[in-house]
Image (cartoon, rainbow, N blue to C red; front, side, top):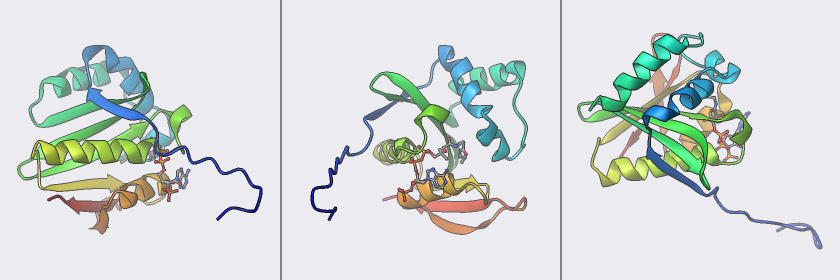
Length: 164
Ligand SMILES: CC(C)(COP(=O)(O)OP(=O)(O)OC[C@H]1O[C@@H](n2cnc3c(N)ncnc32)[C@H](O)[C@@H]1OP(=O)(O)O)[C@@H](O)C(=O)NCCC(=O)NCCS
């Protein structure tokens, strides 16, 4: 309960939708990948060059083991979600545009991606790996049901969610 007389506005979850990534998203997805926080918390800790990113992106779009989605909030691109499939398991990763962070967009993107993964029976086990200082990422994965499963060899926190 808020203070008497206080104005409480419940905006609900952000109005986010996922669509399949397409060729013309290449620069946008690189800009999110190369944002300073995303670089700091990445496993390589380096930005990716335009050439390397372009090659990786074109290959990812046609790779049956990769699902790449772009999230839009009322038509404006706000982030990307990627699922790397490996048999019955998949690794989920996420990036939100810097200007859209801290409003629940990341959590909502994860919820929608997980619903699609479940609906299409893509995998039964989803994992995610986050830098131990990446509080926002750890919190977002935990809020949608992931549990900590341990650490990777390079000290990242491994999260897991079993579907269905
Ligand atoms: C990690 C990231 C995807 C989170 O997306 P987001 O839209 O900002 O996150 P949300 O607004 O959904 O917040 C998720 C939770 O983290 C908390 N949070 C948000 N920003 C935070 C911050 N800077 N520090 C600590 N907690 C934070 C939120 O309060 C929320 O928890 P709550 O529901 O208990 O309040 C986004 O910050 C990002 O793209 N970072 C750079 C790339 C990256 O690190 N990707 C993850 C690699 S797997």
